[in-house]
Image (tube, helix red, strand yellow):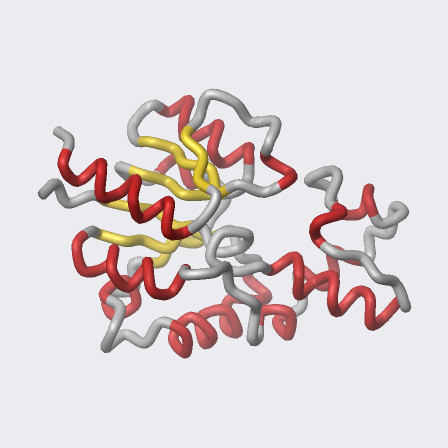
Length: 187
C-alpha cells in the first residue's frame, strides 16, 4: 500500500461553513438565503451587494458547531490510519483560537493522528505544500495546486466550482475515500 500525504481543506469540504454564515446573516437581516442559491464566489454579489456578510466569516462565533458534510469524520478517521492527513486552511487569524478549539473537540487527538501531531497548516498558498493530494473546493486553490504539478488536485463539488474542468472531482466523502483507495494501489 502506498502511504499518501493528503491535504484537506476545512470550509466547504469538511464543514458547511457557508450554511452557518447564511443562517446567522438571515437571523440578522430577516432574509432567507441558502447556500444552494450561490451564484458567484464573491458572496456579497448574490445577496444584493451587502459586503457586511464578510464580517460573519471573521467572527469566531461562526466557527462554533459548524454543520459538517456527510461522512467527513468517519472517512477522515479511516484515512488518518493509513495515510498522512494534513489540515490545510485559510482560516482568518481572528478565528484561529475558536477554530482550533472546535477541531480538538470534533477530532480528538487520541483518535486522530493529524490532531495529535498538529498537522495543521494555515495559509492561503496551499500549493506550496508538497502533498500527494489536495482536496479543496475553491477553484483558485485547485488551479494553483494543479499548475504546480507536484500532486493531484481533487475538487470537492459544489455549485461555485462546477466551471472548473480537467481536474478530478468528487461529490462526497465516500467517493473521495474510494479515490484514495485506488491511489494506494497505484505506483
